[in-house]
Length: 593
Image (cartoon, rainbow, N blue to C red):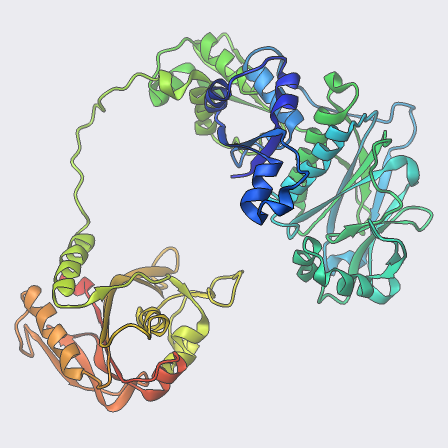
């Protein structure tokens, strides 16, 4: 959930009313927001860096407000104020409009070349006119872009937003891609020109920009945007050019957004243009944004931004029943209008026509509209009632069995561990002396770290890593875990299934095979499974690469293999950075349900 920091006094001035902290907290709750923290720049520095760093810092009170992930139109002071004013019925919900250039001239044009196809193939653009900045509004403008980059743009991996002083550049603009050595320009906040390759080296130590270098660093071509005079606007998604930077004197802004997905960039551009225009245009009551043309490599021409409205129709009875209220259709339409969803009764029964603005891409189904009606009505105002359907919840059999086994394994002297459900490929393959192709592992398509590449297929690696992290504890170490592993299964609609397993390890100066064997006997006793080959359980010698040769047994119950136990192979022990013998048992408990 994004957090917006706003200066309290500026907020109250914009709202035209002063509140106590408690009153504003209540207003936020009523609007579906949360006042997370009341602090100041000085308090933040003292808390994070100590008192010395806080000397001279501002004592201005800051409100940190948690904004729902679907309300990108509230990510700045100006957007937040407008949303609250509409909610309090002091202003009407804005209506956004795309217009042609006021002077009757040609729209600004962005031409995309085919070289961009291999790196960031999509781009859109728009123009904002008659902007007026104060220092506070300028800071809010910059912060809004950063909020969008960090949240909806997924740290610039999906979309990168560039804003430029239109009066310092001239169209048409060209979006292309070139080798790093052929790109040379003066970036923001630098005193000289650099090649793209030099910038990559320069920004490796930059606390902010170094996090984005990986997006294009290994690409043979880097994306770049020029104006008609060859001036570099930006090298997305890394840095803008210094020539077209936004300043307090900027009046007209050219916005370009580059992305890897056209649908996403459409939506992102839509949001950013609307948000910026509403917040910072001198004549914001008009809510207008100037169109721009985008020419694709195949010659297609599209006009952006696409400020499309749509209408949904639903009944007042639908909302009343699902929210638990009893309001007229006219009253519900008024509630929705307060949430910036212009609504009116259609005249046919209690049907309500709801206009979905382009800023609310999150409104997909009728239930999304119902949720906004509930927020406007006030969750605290909904009368509590007993559900008409009487149900009694029962614990799932597999969870009930798990809880019973946990208690008795603890009583047997073992300590329960809770390990990660994700692990590295090495943990479930190389370290266990297995081939990754044989593990039936479900792979994460975009792992953020090498430690979490696959869903675990065994509980054993997690327990061994837990022992490795607690080697200084007194011996013996006796750990167990009863949890799910994930296995590929083509018979399932999702291609995989969960499997509840029990794993226990014994780590000491001696292997302790008899301890693990005794634990198996105890578990089977608890499950009321007698020793025997047909209807009972038994073990027989087996070979498994994870275990020491000749010290491994396969476990059978009612003639079906349910797991293994034995002494771990020395290679497995050393690969988990352990130095002493270790015995383990790993069984499937689902057959006992």
